[in-house]
Length: 210
Image (cartoon, rainbow, N blue to C red; front, side):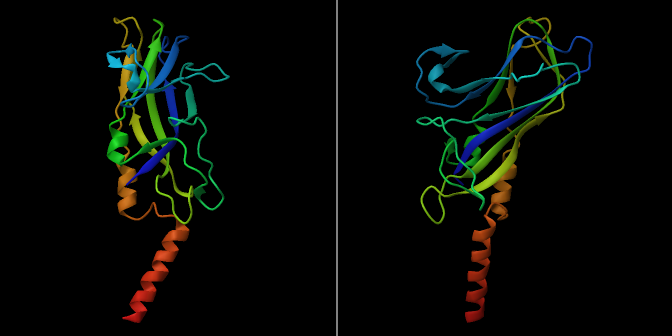
């Protein structure tokens, strides 16, 4: 099943421990193979780097016990614009990042990186992805919309810091939830309602002719 990842939504909850909050900058990194840069970052050729986002909003982020949520658009290689969802449940154009399978989504990791020695202790995090089909239906650039699906989730305590005695500078986010998208596709839940209704009507017509 070919899909387009258009946006991600990443939420974190800071621990309530007295020194769990931080003023250090935190980044969300997304790695994909064979991109266009030539330098080296963290042992990978940076042509493999797809995008880096700062987890920074207009308010004070990462305060004690606070839930922070960030939504980012996924630019494609040639065009930084993203798909627009129409009222009938389709994307009117393709944007975001193309994947030829859900398994390919699972092979493209995200990483958290802290830039600073001020410890940040995370109580939990949750990563969602917004998907559409990469195959148009009805007319060109008319892509069925699949909605938001869980990519990763953790309720384990995580310590981030460039001070190795306190925590880790990097943390890999294990993409283990995208299979719910594949399961939904197998069950027919990802078929747009209008298309699904037409398929049922055709099936009934064939049964009536038998």
